[in-house]
Image (cartoon, rainbow, N blue to C red; front, side):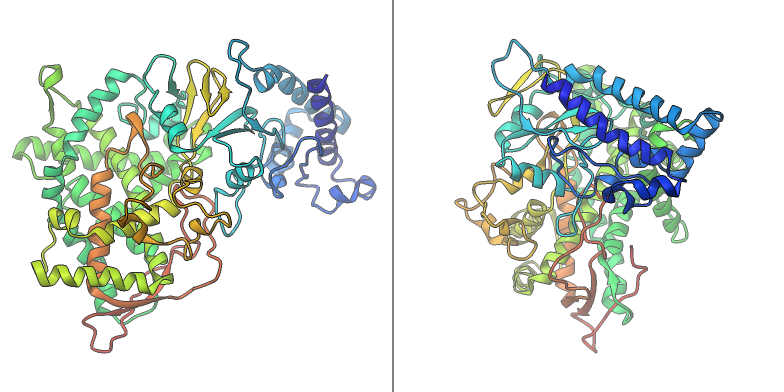
Length: 593
């Protein structure tokens, strides 16, 4: 009976939405609508849910299916399909489809595995039935993680809870013990598996890489061979290249007295330059570097665009054309490597890698290309965002930046200007603590979606077979008992930024720290990423005497769509160079919006 009432009440409120859409041109009807509806533009009807179906956000009307139905292109499409239909007929048809969709999903939404005693996770199904809770909502102070943080707190911060996403129940898991149970079970009997990939995803990303592999043997084989490019020896060879790239990127900041600079652009350009110099080993001319950056941006941004993932003719998109451009560069470089031998790049290591466990098997051309692209995808966005955030945190805490500088001054006195992998790994404990603290406060928003092949029990709640489940790193860090503060200050970019906690075993959040993931999908490039970030910040601290945040607001506003949250303004700074005669050196770079 509760299920029937749930569907009827939901359908009633959905009916109002579609009614508003169907009769939007009529001012007479608009005038008779309740204030809740008439206060919005009915060309884009509102969405709301009954009080019995608790809503987690105030901005549901912006992302619901009902808002989509009210957009002009969709209305024109429906009018074209049903040219002679009355608004009432359209209303009836849409309500029928909606009711049927909800009815067909009722068992999947509410039924638990009868063979498992544990109950379903707590949580509510809210929002539009075919889209669900407004899980893409954000607030200025939190960013994209706003919904899960609010929902978790409302439920008492459980280790697992549920919400509705695209008409399906979604289980959110947090806490290191729970996360490891989920992530560590992949490729095991009864464990989780990757969700099926869209055809367009395979076209844009390739299907022979670590991201797309869903078979245990294939995944292990790829990790063994691609992993040969990420060994300590390989990172040691990469250090001189990293140092040169950092100095090239910071040169305008050090020498040119110009306008304030966006650190997001500096850090993004840095990681992309690492991509073409170290990962691919390309010998690009100065005139070719901007084009490389544009092509990578087109490919990455377009490859996560819903339009490119869902609609046909993806091979006509800018993202696919950018992929073709990049693949051509990689293929040319592979030919040169095979002709001339290794050059110390990551691509070179993959080209000449052999698998002793499978009779000297080598990576195919397609596997080399697909994994080289994935390494660029994984390394550029995340490292650039973390560096941008770290500079923001240091700008809000000058006393901590001073400690980073003091550590580097001691190293220069001891070793000179050189920076080796051993120095970065062994002699920069405070610098490493700064980076880890930045990743603790602003990690990746959420993990990839997995699906249990058998019902799992997590934190005393069952996640039925077939339910999508995601491990939320942000919540795991937020609920870490080692650092937790009731007022949430431990996640604040200023009050919570305490790198010294990492230097003491009693305060170090080691168990709950999962910035690089866990299990078979643990970030293969974590060592290279840490070397990149340490090198960048070490040279930054040596060359920049002091810097100020141009937009030093009390509340940092965060970008809506970012794998790792980063500030809206891109962390704009005005810097003083160590060697500047005027002691006021600023640089000019186009500010990333």
